[in-house]
Length: 347
Image 1 (cartoon, rainbow, N blue to C red):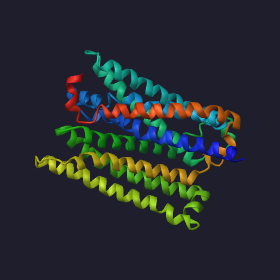
Image 2 (image 1 turned 45 degrees about the vertical axis):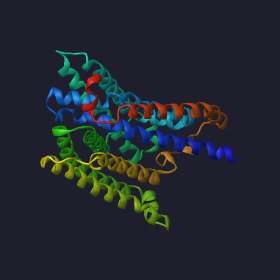
Image 3 (image 1 turned 90 degrees about the horizontal axis):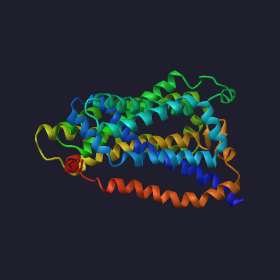
Image 4 (image 1 turned 90 degrees about the vertical axis):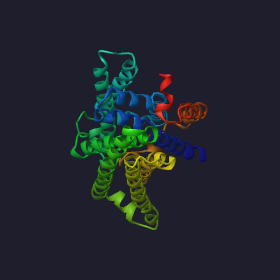
């Protein structure tokens, strides 16, 4: 009995971990692509590409790992989500393919570089928008009948808004990453854009939270009923604090650059970790509201779990490959710890 209860919960937590890792890691390099049109010169575009050249492929590994966990451990949820969100999933994959091809060919091209720039920006924006759109569908909830039909119930004003909100959030992560990895004009421009994006992201988080509480009585009861609500209230308070510190640090980077003063390492790197903490807190709030559902009010992870024998069969492979993926990810960041300019001779 303990095994039957523990394994679905283990895979549910593992799926959440894979999604969080993907959002945090691939989020900032998708954000680099979204920011691409905001930087004008070839030198700036080269800098943006070099800043993620060592890590972008490792970041996307978490998407594959999460998809494998969903397919193997929760086949019912995989089939339902894939059928309901078939079109946005396919568009997301097309966007990821476009940006991956553009990333490789841009370094080798000359006359066609402008087209690869556009493909990289469009592919990154499309992938991020589709991920936000799918998030909106899961938060908003769906009718049971729409799971088995080919309706466009996923295409709503709310899901379109969450698509734009996720794009802005990824762009914010990209700005803070560039603040950490850049010097001079690019660093100042990234900090300035980051402050503007932060205001929109916080407004989007507020509107999405209010909409969810209004439309989902179960989530509203969970957040405001019982003693545990006091603990849940810490999440938005911590998010406000992190946003306040992030806005201040980005402003400090700009002021110190304008004064031609040396910027401390703390003020260069801390914005990225504060932006990541915003995503972590938002993800924790989402899980707290939707638990134990994979598809809200339709399929819980207990209902969707594969037979216990299948979950046990998968376990050795998971325990082998999870450390390997973590090691590969950490290796990419270990060999590229400084500023982009410090590694230019390697390209």
